[in-house]
Every structure is written in C-alpha cells, then in structure tokens.
Image 1 (spheres, rainbow, N blue to C red):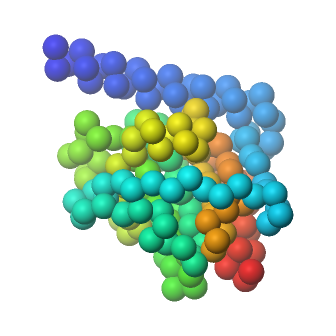
Image 2 (cartoon, rainbow, N blue to C red):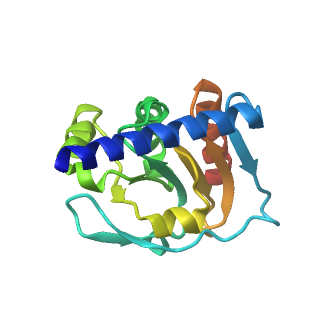
Amino acid sequence: MKRRGKLFTKRLVFTACLLALALAWNVGVGGCGSKNSSKVDAPLAPDFKLDVLDDGSKALKDYRGKVVLLDFWSIGCPPCRRAIPHLVSLYEKYKGKGFVALGISFDRKEMEQLRGFIEKYSVTYPILLGTMDVAKAYGVRSIPSVFILDKKGRIRLHMIGFNEQIGQQIEKKVKDLIKE
C-alpha cells in the first residue's frame, strides 16, 4: 500500500510538470507563461503562515519591506530542479539588498529526499512546506511557479516554467524592485 502511495505521488508530480509544459507551450512566451503587473494594478499577495523545513513557521507578512520571491516547486519536477541553482545564486547575490527568496515545496511526504536535495544543491534560502490552500490562493496550477512581490507585498511578476530567459526576467524584476 505504501508503494502505491509513492507511485501515485510520482505520477501526480509528473502530470503537474506535463501540464506546466503544455501551458507554457500554449502561452508561448519563451517557453513560459508570465504576468507582469505595474505598481498601480498589482494585486496584494495573499498572506499565509507555513511551516519552515526544520525551523518553526513563517508568515508572508514577516517579510514586508523586502522584495520577495516565492517559488512553488517539487523535487520530482525537472524544470523546478533546473531553476534551483539559479534561485540560490540570485538569493546570494541580492539577500543583503532587501531581497528574500522563499521556496514553497510540495514534498511533505518525501521529507528525507527534500532534506537531501536541499543539502546537495546548497539551498541557503528558507524552504516552506506548501499546502494546497496556499497554492489555491495564488492560483498555482503548475510548477515551477514563481511570484515576485514588491516591498509592499504586491504581486509584480508571475512566471510559469523555467529556462535561461525566464531566469534573466526574474533577475531583472528583482533588481528593478530593489531600486523602488
């Protein structure tokens, strides 16, 4: 029975990744979907409080006054895994300038694998344990799904998928928002 549950989880993650690729293909923005909001029409990001991997819990409101990157991801998703080194580099480069990255992982049932992944890729930013309620509040239907929030907590960029072009767009938005 336990093996059947793991197989179901793997199939679910695989299906989510396929849906992300299909959506990205249909949107046609460099292999990704994106939504870039101006300061005026940017919606306020839904607040949440999630468990931090091995370190209590954090609420999104704890990061007000900083530019925040939220990365909804899972270790079973190949584009998610490709994004991690870029996000680690981005975090290290800008963390002293009012920027924080938060990984929101959907790997609650694979905690040891998640810990191993975090160690292998030297992830230095906080990893939060995502819930379906938070994913629903953000409208996450595929992963990786990255949201960048300005210092007032407004969603200024939403990207689906990951490739080099997306990585460059994310970094540009982070740099621009740090200057605001």
